[in-house]
Length: 509
Image (tube, one colour):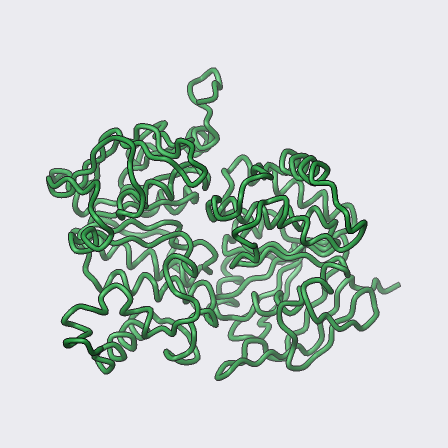
């Protein structure tokens, strides 16, 4: 007897100006199954899931839910039909609390909702799935990682039967990732269809029952668990072999160019976000900072970029004190900042690529003459960055919000690298990127290291830090709990430190 899919997508086509994002895509999702969706950035996987979750409407094609054809015209339609998705770019109201955002998504029940009941349920779900967040905190006060937790909690709160998760492990320690996988398996065993979008092939191998691969908007193949093979998956995704290890030069033994001494600062909730941070970085060295998002990474980066005031401590760059300098003065010293929020902090969504490229240098001689912009120079520089960094887009004159996450990241990195910085602070550079784009970004960072740039790399991916960094510091609750040469990295020990567990006794920091 043939089992009816919980979701059946047939001949889905989605066209944007100048781009066919999905081209005759077919996809079946079954209850009790974890279905991995793979593909390079721009391959159409996020667009396909945005259609299923009601954010986009298909240009052509049909969607069946439990054998019945349905029109999903909005995210509320999707939620009403038991479909929930955590998008790559979050759909939260910044000025509302966590509880208020989750309450807004409720599709059934009384109009009068008890705030205390919502807070209790959020707390219970957070404890159950390892997704702790303060229900009464305002969304604008949260880090990117914490916002992702809110999105996952919102989906769980609505008891969705189709659970779409886009890079859900990006904000978790190795231990928490294992716990999440166990919970996702429990959800599938309880009759849910789970869609798991990930660029980490080891996670897909561990978790997926079925894998569908997209390339250039088309399905290149769909395989079951027994057929999973990394080499085959890479070939289906990008059509070529990928580098799994990089050659990198020995760490620099020069004098430190950046000396951070006992820096403390408040976070957006007016509590201590940095608590006596101290470390040094040399020219031609990559210093990795490992930790779960929300433990002071953003506050540290903003202090170094001149965007956040300090309570105490010193930051010296080539011997000059830079605490108290404006962001413009910091940029002028040769310090570049690639923030975690690429489409909010890094780029302006409604501006086109050309305008975004010149944002930091629009008043320089390179791009302006008197009160007038040199549009030809701006266009030429944008075209060069697009070409050299292989940024895929319809046009450099379209708003950048039309681009995929990986291409946004490459455009942002291209702009920052073009300024030839002496120090580069990079937060989660490959979050949400596919393996082809990850390789490109990693090569760019290693090339900068070879060019004697000092780099601070903030990442939750221990594998990424091991590949790129020379030294790693582990951050928890605004403190560096340990620092190691990468050659001496111990994944379990660092994972424990990321969770705030220090010493053999398992004491919490």
